[in-house]
Amino acid sequence: MRGSAAVDCPIPLLFWNTIWAAGTGSGECVLGQVYLAAGNRTEGVPLQGQTLSISQNAALYTLLGVKFGGDGISTFKLPDLRAVAPNDMSYYMCVNGIFPGWGE
Image (tube, rainbow, N blue to C red; front, side, top):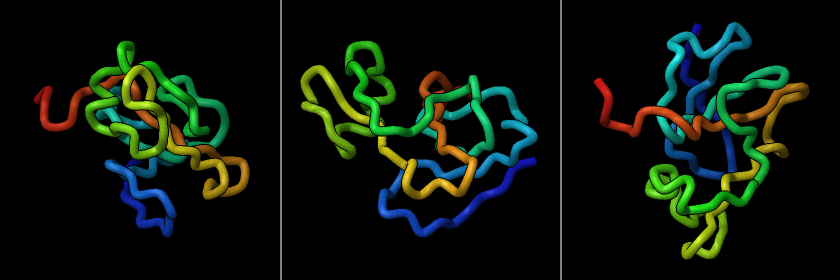
C-alpha cells in the first residue's frame, strides 16, 4: 500500500513517498525517491549523510548535486534524515532506479 505524506522536515527533498511496512509495492523505484520503512531494507540506501562518488552515481548526482554536501568534483552527499525519522523507522533513498520522467 502506498501513500504520500507531508512531513515538516528541515531538508527539502526531490521525491517524498511514504511506503508502508508492507513494501514498495511496484518492485521498481524512481531514482532519488525517498521512503520511510521499518526495519532493515535491502532496496535503497539509508539516509545517513553518506558521501558518494560522482563517477559511480552520476545520475543521482544529476538530481541532488551538492545540496547536502560534497566537493562537487568527485563526491556528493546524501541527506541525513536520522533525526527526523520516527521511532524504529528509517528513511531510505532509491539509488538504482528509473530516472524521473523516463522509463514508461
